[in-house]
Image (cartoon, rainbow, N blue to C red; front, side):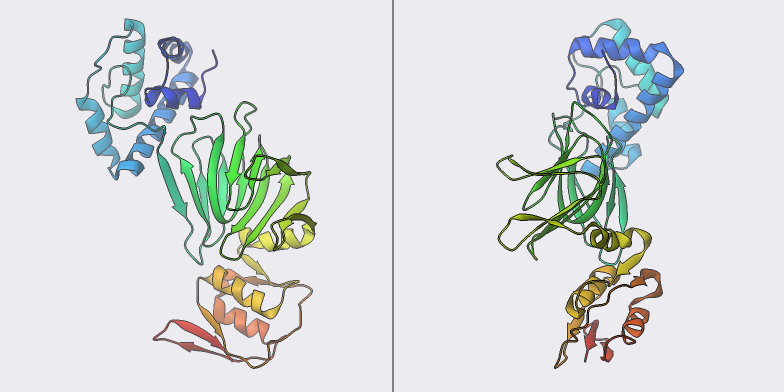
Length: 321
């Protein structure tokens, strides 16, 4: 029987059978590397419990140390597991971990504040790079057949490969399903905006009835039109729009109003347009460095557009005139 982190998390969450528990016991005794993997997995379990309950690590470990195993398991299993866990966290837990909640239905939420980018590593090793304002919901530990997360906003996913458990990004419009790959998803329900950009690997875009609507190869993009239908889009433009990963805001290929929206999102500021005639020029290229600040961005754009700006301190608002 293969022992991986997912099986260990099931064990910590009291979801394993006796046969699985015995396999973990034997596997832990095989070598030092397995023992270390068990320790790391158990630490992550405790951190998950901490996040779910608002406890400190010390409080979680103290609760575990005061519990005792209430049902019988074979001696070799209990001894090995107790010893390994004691090495990991310095407490004796005796067999299956006892707690008044299970990780099976536990959901965590991570949100990138406006003007900030955030990187989140999920329990299966998948790395999520979140753009300003993005929000993801995900289980503390993936125990179901699908590794499913919910996304609002934009994020790049670098998914750990697992043939037995596909990874699904659920959005308001479509879902994106993969086995292991790297891709970008934009899902802004407020603006009825959805797109999927494949960087490497392969992905399927599926509707809510689980019907595959598109299969993407590397460097392909699909977007959603106003009627909810998908169409192919330009990869180079999508790649430019992912410049936020390098601390940049792309202003190429979009109009003045869309540029201002990007500045609002990238810098985490509020901008009001109070101008008689909206400039109609579309810049063919250009990126703005986020670290330079929004005022610097305005000054750069004034070389291309005719406008002035002022800052209302009381309203914390930039006004374009």
